Length: 317
Image (cartoon, helix red, strand yellow):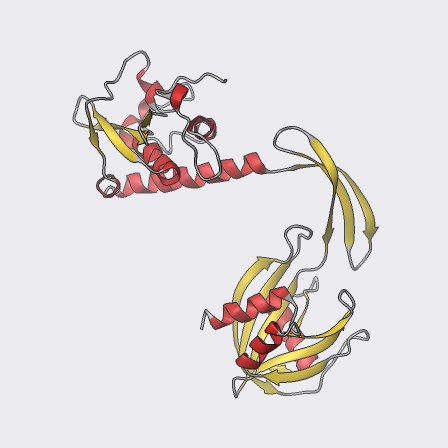
């Protein structure tokens, strides 16, 4: 087992929800503790060789977020408390190294209140900063590193490729397949009577005609809103002056790197006929919200991002 210098490391075997223990937290925090996360009164004492100085309270409360338990403090000269963690009888102090050879008495302690500590706005801000840095660094530890890449199909429609990846444990595995396509827009559009404007078209992936929302790709010269207005007009002949972007969301994170931009358009008015591309054969239908819910349950409204867009619109009105 790797050796550490913080108090209680030998028995710090409690686990968070993902199975990590305080030793692993120390490894991550040692990369993000800094002068900026140090308490202002001790910043002159902070150095890359003494990274735990001035970090005790925000670190202890961060660990409490993930491990539970209580935060206690050892009274120091001057009246301040040095904070540490107690979880199910397991005592550990990730920032004890700052005291060098001094041995703290962890039996003479007082329970610490998060609310009292965070009455100081600068301490709360340092805690939030440390947590953000910690989570970002923890995420980096989970990241795969792309190695060899082969482009199987690369044309104006799709870049379909396979790649090997180096995993966090150092092993290299593959192939993993992914693709790049245009970002696209999805429009939750309602007319002046509150009816949803939907389109019907054939989807060759499942070999069926489906009911869905107006949608389409974002061209290089477009912004997302401009694309949404164009697609609504071309596919349905309707226009709106009441637009709102609801969300930008990854379309298919497991396989694709493109994004869907979800918009709502209300009080749409019919202003023209459809203007479809040569491969588009669409019918326009109006439905109540309840009717669309029935279509979803019957398996006749099958685009998952479109279903998400409808539910999002219903819950953000």
